[in-house]
Image 1 (cartoon, one colour):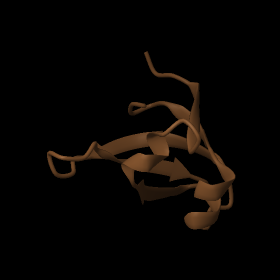
Image 2 (spheres, one colour):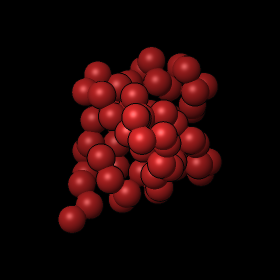
Image 3 (cartoon, helix red, strand yellow):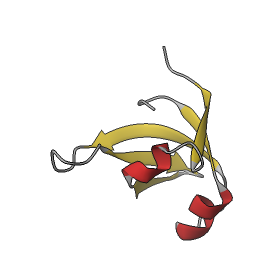
Length: 68
């Protein structure tokens, strides 16, 4: 996933972050330690949410529109 991608979040991610929508837009990445992938900043329903890298796993989100 990269900045500009539109995503659909799983119901478990929506529940954990107490979101009102399962649709999001990747608006940024936050580097973590060199042992872990970057975290994400996701725009959901007008709010930017800092989410862990685990949303990139196939069962946690799906890219529905990729940035070129």
